[in-house]
Image 1: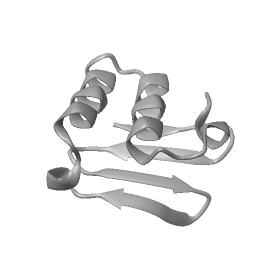
Image 2: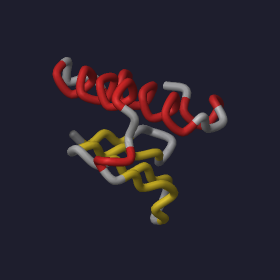
Image 3: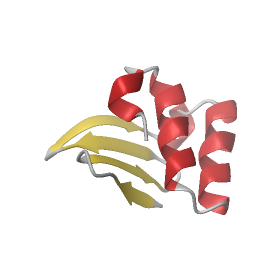
Image 4: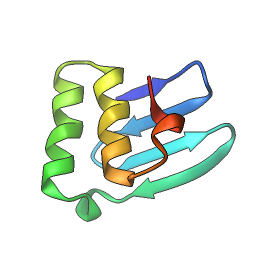
Length: 71
C-alpha cells in the first residue's frame, strides 16, 4: 500500500516499509526487521485501506517527530 500526503510525506508498505519525504529516502525497514506489534499495525492499516492508520503506524515504529507525521 502506498500513501502520499499533502506535505510531501510518503509511506510505502508491502512487507518492507519505506518512508520518504520529497525525493530522498529517509527510512527503509526490511520485512524481517519490523517488530511484530508494528507489523500488525501496518497490516491492519492495509486491511482497512487507511492512509491515516498507515502514517500513524509509521510514526509509532520510527518514534519520529510527531509534527512531521500528524495527518
